[in-house]
Amino acid sequence: MSTYRVIHLVGSSSTSWEDAAKSAVEQAAAHLEDLRVAEVEMLDIRLQDNKVIEYRARVHASFKYNPEIH
Image 1: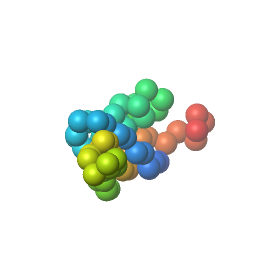
Image 2: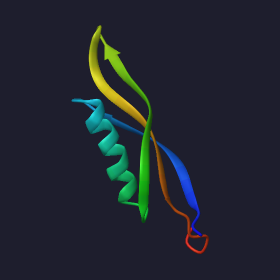
Image 3: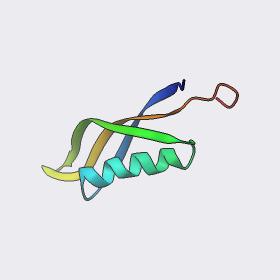
């Protein structure tokens, strides 16, 4: 039996929500081992002077929990 930990991430991109979600997962993968599933929870945008300046994706990501490491 395995146990997984779920974390919340927020990625951002100046080009798309897809790139924002990808950025969040890639950054997490650089610091965590064995990422399994990521789920986009919410998408939003930042505006400045009535123009979109940033796409943001809130992501839940799960990875295998190893109590000896974490």
